[in-house]
Amino acid sequence: MDPHLLRTYVTVARLASFSAAARELGYTQSAVSQHIAALEQDLGAPLLGRRPVVPTPAGERLLEHAAPLLLRLDAARADVIRMAAAPPSGVTLATTPTALGPRVLAALPVSGVSVRVLGRDEIPAAVATGHADLGLVDGPAAPSDPLQLPDVAPLTSHAVAEEPLAVLLPTAHPLAGRPGLRLADLADARWIDAPDAAVPLARLRAVNGGGAFRPALAYAGTDVRTLTALVAGGHGLVLLPRFAAAAVPDTVAVPLAAPRLVHRTELLHAAGLAGAVGDLVGRLSADR
Image (cartoon, rainbow, N blue to C red; front, side):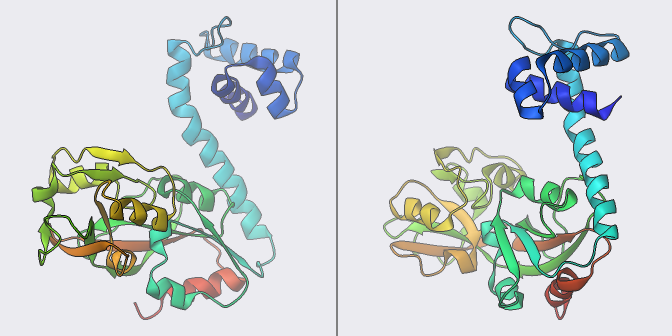
């Protein structure tokens, strides 16, 4: 398939409009229509209904393939450009909010770093496509076990930190005085679903082998301070690395006693490290 045609198709399907896709892509509406017709002829199947503009069953199936295909093409382009370019003088670091633990912060240089806080699922793609030089991702894992990351491109990952996990509760919560908490005993508690600022509830279900872990409130942001204020206000519990849960006003951080998990942070990068990027990777990888 011609990737230009595929990209046009994905844009039309996302916007549900030929004219809107033409404006976004910088084409005429006639050119967009020709792209879709050429792709449908190549595949021998209609991909889009016209009134309204919605994918057909064949088009829906193509969309499942299209995103990883286009991402891989963008990653290949970025990889070649990166190898041919001069070493960067600065570093763009894409990170989750809870990956910036004490060890990572101590390794960052005093200047020359641009930090972008993104959702967990966005970071591997940002590094692969050259929108970030390095990425920091985090999550719960058994001690020394690697994180399960999406295979978006040939990226290298290094563990840079492992921290204890704690359940953050409001001070008046009946479990706030416990020395430790078992995740299995909290399956029916009120939780805040904050997949980009705390351990996602889907991950809690996975490591617990099931359980409800129903959200009492959904938080779509990446600001940990806002999240902890919601906990203090009694809107639900969250699981955080201990450094992020410590000393939060009107809350108590109780260590996670079982299962045996740590908060693991990994550094992602592409091949061909040089300049400031290589220096920072060396700092974060040393003496771990």
